[in-house]
Image (cartoon, rainbow, N blue to C red):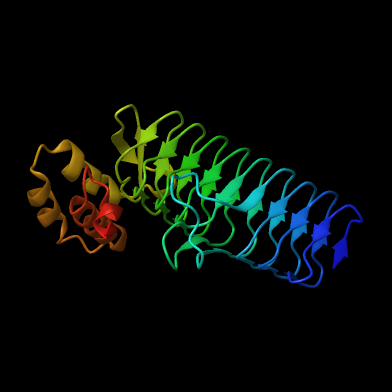
Length: 253
């Protein structure tokens, strides 16, 4: 462990081997930093926070701030962060407000300049939040999804696995997996180029171009053996149970 003389580390914090804490960083009580992390300079981490290995926090990143909500942070809430994430300058990650809640971030994600993860959010692995991308509370971003700059989610929105949302758009409804969306109000424009396949292209045509009622289109796709198509069908049915296509709202108490 290497701690710069100007840094402040609470005696109760746990800091793993090989972690570097740079100038003017503040690590508060209730923080668990695993091995091999790097806090470059002027990073603030406030607990309760558990952080894995090999993460990099650039200057002015803040992890563990209170929710940007009228309600305070839950006294028993926490943040959990996996391995190999990169938090660029000005990134913020908020504590949950729900009792016993967790703001959860997986591994190998990239958070670009001034991106924001709101209270009670859940992110998978290999996610990218571009510059000024913001996630409202209770949002979920699944593995490999990409939210471009100046975009943001409404509360309880889910961005599906491998989805791509273009810049400058408000994401007010769930974004289907493996698709890309654009516009205000956004529309599904096609299959994400990184996930292009005949099966997914056919699914896109059936759901969004055929003119079939959504239940009939999904029923037709049930016969497709492709696992990504099956995931798309399941996601769309789950999303429809929420309000305005926000499936996460079904969890609201």
